[in-house]
Amino acid sequence: MWTTNGDDSFFCENNMFAGRKIWSNAIKVNRQTYNLRLHCENVATLLSILVISTRFGGCFVPKPSKFLEVASHDLVRDIAISSQEGTSPGIFWLGGYNSDMFGGKANALSELCEEAGHAFTRFDYTAHGQSNGDFMQACISVWLADAISVFEEMCDGPQVLVGSSMGGWLAMLLNQHIKQKYPDRIKAMILIAPAIDMTRELVPNRFTQEQLSELDTVGHLAVPSAYSDEPYIYTLKLITDGEEHLLLNKSIKTDCPVHIIQGQQDPDVPAAHAQRLLQHILLDEATLTLVPDGDHRLSRPQDLELLKRITHSFVTR
Image 1 (tube, one colour):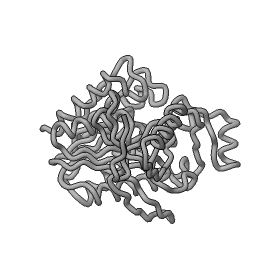
Image 2 (tube, helix red, strand yellow; image 1 turned 30 degrees about the vertical axis):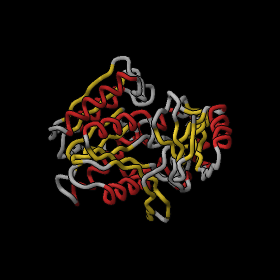
Image 3 (cartoon, one colour; image 1 turned 180 degrees about the vertical axis):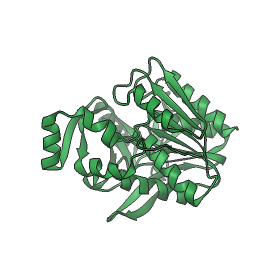
Image 4 (cartoon, helix red, strand yellow; image 1 turned 90 degrees about the vertical axis):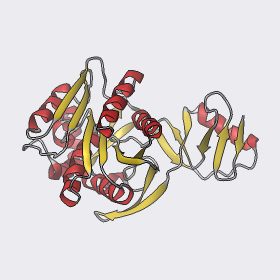
């Protein structure tokens, strides 16, 4: 049974969502988030929306805690943020390319923080999830600016950065920025299949010569993805901007422990790439955990338990 609560949320009493409040400002269909402002005055209206959502493989997306206006790189955008209050060290989540902040790994960390009483912050990059903005104008510099703005606005005390895929690269870049301004604010980093320098080392290697030519002439490229029914868009701006943030051309000093979790069956970020990153962290504690049958997402129950266990070890140090 579903009922409305008068605060733009729905309350569900069925087995799947028993006792949970479901916010109504967005709905996700095939990994694409659509912002909605639903004001259902009766259960019948709500049920019709629920049926449409289910029919197209959709689900309701939780409402962000707030939107933060960020202005940088000639772009002004509203960044969607979800935060949980708690003690420090907190957990700061950075998702992957074309992902949103309510994926399986982020939700697992949210549960961990709720159980342990630690603060948790997550957000959607520009033109991702519930954040607005022009995807064609976004790039590593823009998404790093998002991360810096959210961190400075939302985080108090030491934080453990947890980054997945592209988020692993952004976590490393965020750490470099934060440690210069706020020493001792980054307690540790956990990197899941980190796509360090992906715009040079990983993404272009997937393209044919014809696709590379199209990228140069048109300025963007649509590529089928195993993670979405819609193709992924890669822009020439993304590739060229990435050159400003390369890390694997020098030794990396993190000033905090780093734990890398890498699936050995990952077709997008090979295990050798994670091992190469490890070789560049020369002066700080660094650990690599290989998951022999793990893929890129590392979102199976056993993968999530591994992530939670490693994260818990850092927040309780």
